[in-house]
Image (cartoon, rainbow, N blue to C red):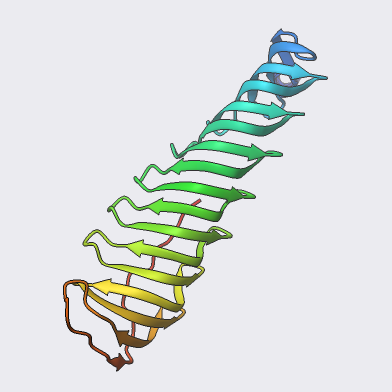
Length: 221
């Protein structure tokens, strides 16, 4: 009998926890606070029973979004603080990061530029915590297209990329020397010397084949 009674109490309490409810205000057309079945919470303006306008959404994993909503989805300008403490400030479209925005990662990396479907896409700038910088084109979350990667010592590669790998023709500057370089998926195929940035009256011409040992950068989303 006691076991049956305890089980009934447990089921009753569980049913309370999963019920979605408006805990304050007008959660249909107006301002209010609403707790969803999964434990997440929204406080802000509503239209026809859905978050619409300005509000704050507390995800059950601890992430918090403050910004604009449309018909129940993040849409417009907002700020998202993820449970990892990474912070995104920028635009959403139909619930997904899209448009221009800035992501600051907890490790010190920063991306500022264009997004599509939650990934880097278009023109942007990625600054690594160590001070090196990539600026140029992105696609599907990768360095893709044309762009320049500048290391902390000032050396750089300015050219073509595919999925974070140098691929195609580019200009490389190292120790003040410029060269035209040709890569295939991060492997240096050919290098042709150019006039040094420090030289004034001399040019060199050379062609070598060797393997590139540059660092492969991994981008997190």
